[in-house]
Image 1 (cartoon, one colour):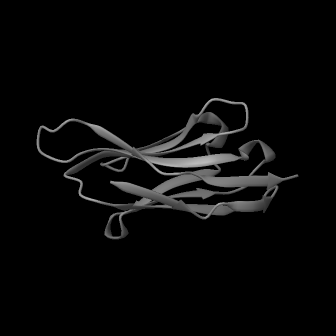
Image 2 (cartoon, rainbow, N blue to C red):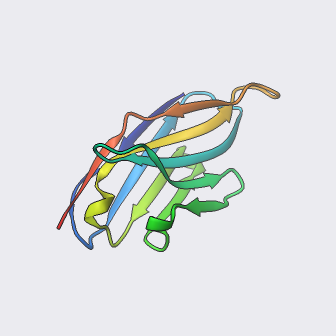
Image 3 (cartoon, rainbow, N blue to C red):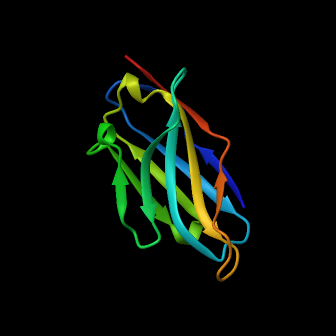
Length: 120
């Protein structure tokens, strides 16, 4: 399974950006997909997660500003980022938890990351 993120870049304070994560490869069942981020000198943190049933959860700092969604037909997960702040500057990674067979082991795949920089 391969994940490829896109959509990162430079955005001004208060602006918007949409990240995409396209998935390829065989998956029997998806359990959840998520976006993480890692700022310089900081640990990687969970930003948003969406389950196979469509339930979502967000870290407190992005609630009301970011939205995670999926397009199953396109095998893509998105992160809509609105009202961005300088503290949102980080490398953003998508990940998927999945199995490749019934009763198979749970696996995780990660993308290579996309840089988001918010200017003040």
